[in-house]
Structures are given as structure tokens and as C-alpha cells.
Length: 279
Picture 1: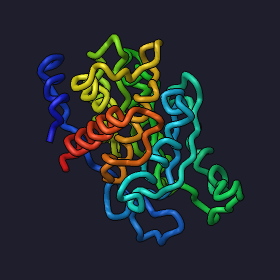
Picture 2: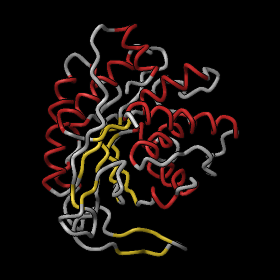
Picture 3: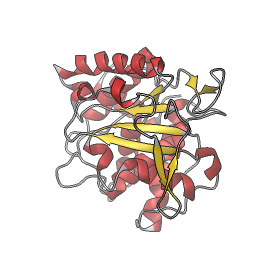
């Protein structure tokens, strides 16, 4: 199923359209048997996620923390329960990151802070079920850097799976003053997902859908590309809906946004994820 906003952009900007890819590969779950398979939006979704990206992830006190709070506030919180680590470099592209080092056993994620700031040592060995990857804001559609995007999408996917970790991609959004970027980014991330049998989170399409329905809700800071609080919130809600197939509508976590704004963003995230993945 192709989302309504994606259909519109396809007709408007290009005659050819890459079907949205919901396919994922599989990997062993954290602490589980090699026969235990992890797959986004399944009965056994990731319970530990490494976020690898740039400032699009770390704005507004970090996307990974917002996703965790969104999940905990949802009615089906247990289904989206997970731990996460964010590893970001400002201005970075997908090729700036040394994924082989990040995913070394007993490295990142070896311990967590829980409860009253207590240190909890996680089980030894592989620390993550999945890694969420993204490129720089325009790299997937840049005339030169788009080749790098596809090259490293493949490299990182192979590296992740060699470590028993399932790759996922975070589809980013158009600049506020360049809405035509939406389709190019959506096509690129969808194709990267198809090529690598990896799950794609359609945050960019959620941005376009929200703007179409509620243009009064500003999803950007003044630079026209980084997310405002509402933009990060929408991305977090889309992640919860896409990766764990948990409906964020009604989540008690609003990040301080007005109730009607939070509800709108939750609804757009849920509808976009369901349309993109054909659920």
C-alpha cells in the first residue's frame, strides 16, 4: 500500500515510483539463542537499538530518549519496551561512522543507568538487536554523495549482520523550503531498504503528511532543516509505530506540546507507518 502523500508526490514530481519496502532481514535477539529471530514490527521486535547518525537525532535532547518515553507512555508499552544508545556526529554522513567498532562485543551498551541512577551491567557479548542508520540531510539525493549513501548502506548492513545485528534506516525529511526533496529522499531510503532487506522508518513521509494536514504546526527550527520539538516528537512517534507496530495515539508522553498538537502528530505517525508498510 502506498501512502496518500507519497502518491501525490509521485504524480507531482516523477513518472516512476519505487514501491515502499517493508521487508526486513533477521538477526539473533539480545541474550537469546541464535535461532531466536529479531524483526522490526513482528512478534519479536528489537529490544536494544543503537542509533547512528547526526544532529537530526540529537536535537531536542536526543531522539532515542524521546522514543523511549513515547513507548513507555503508550497503551501497549510492553510491546515497545527496549533500551537504546545514541551515537551521533554533527554534520556527519553515513560514511563517517565506524560501525565495526561501534558493534564490538562488550563495548557500547555494556552498562546502563537505571532506577535511582544505578549502574546495571548488561549481559556480556552482543549489546544490540538492531542499528538505526541515517545519512546527512541531503546526501541520499546529492548528485555526488548519493552513490556514497547506497555504498555505505550496503557496507553497514553487511557489517551489522556479521555481528548478529539487524540494520534499519531512518528516512529523513525535506527542508522546509524544498518540499520536492520528500520524494527523492523517500525513494532513496526505500531503495536502500529493498537492496539490503532492511526495515525503513518513514519519518520523512510523516513530515510531509503532517504539513499537508496542519501547516500551522512548525516541524523545523529557523535553519529550515533541523527538527523543532514537534518535528522530533513526530519522528519518535513514527519510530514507535514503524519498528514496534505500537499505536502512539493516546501516549501519555507529550514532550510538553499542547494536547491537540501531540494527538495530531501521534495520529499522523501511526497512519503513515501503516500506509507505508501496508499494514
